[in-house]
Length: 359
Image (cartoon, rainbow, N blue to C red; front, side, top):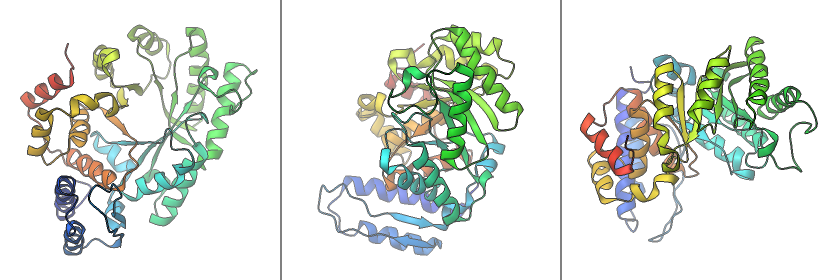
């Protein structure tokens, strides 16, 4: 069953339709009046922020807080086994706390970060999580937190969350303790090795500590990121006592869209997470054929891409900073969660072709 009552689901889908019309006609002074009427009709409670916008102004007045998001829980979503979106927090720096809180306000329940100060503000992510939990009266298992151990090669030499001279095993443990402190939590739902080491021996040293953390109940699952060589992933999978539950890779043409890796993941029950999902396909998503398919599905080209990935059984990372886009993206996740078949098989093939995904 859908985690959101039917009338609310229809309401949020209608909000997406309104948002699409807004994008076509930004000069329309009454576009937010329609949203306000809709929200009052379907009984959502919360605060609306209205902004007087000139044509072409990209600022957005949106729903800041509603009771809609209270219907979501990560633990419930995981139990139904259907694909979902993960909120990505890379490159958000000082805005991390605010954006994570807003993402949770708008329905995101899965959060991705890393113990890599060079690209992530893990402490800010933790602050945003705590603020949202308090504001929305959530429990810890309503949220799913994923962080990463980043080997020294991916760190800023002046800001490393562990002793760079320590053994690999101690580096993992020191980084993990820093992550627990930053994220204000006693356990991590998913711990990911940010990239394989050049030497498989070092990769396995880190992995054995990951397994130890699972044994101790401090981590619920483990995985790896930025692993594009199927032989390396298969070696890790074969040598691991606790198998990787997730592979997180950039989804782009340079890697052939990970076709062989994704097939292996499907065979072994490994969740494939994609990042850079929209950026890498920006040109393809601008094609008129994509726009036509999206329009017929009450989607934007961007939400079509997320729907396409989830329809393949994958888990896209979504790093939007726009409140409107957060609502749109959660709306398409809700459609997937309600088991709607957004695309038929021939449409899936056409979209894959237009994106350049070929075997």
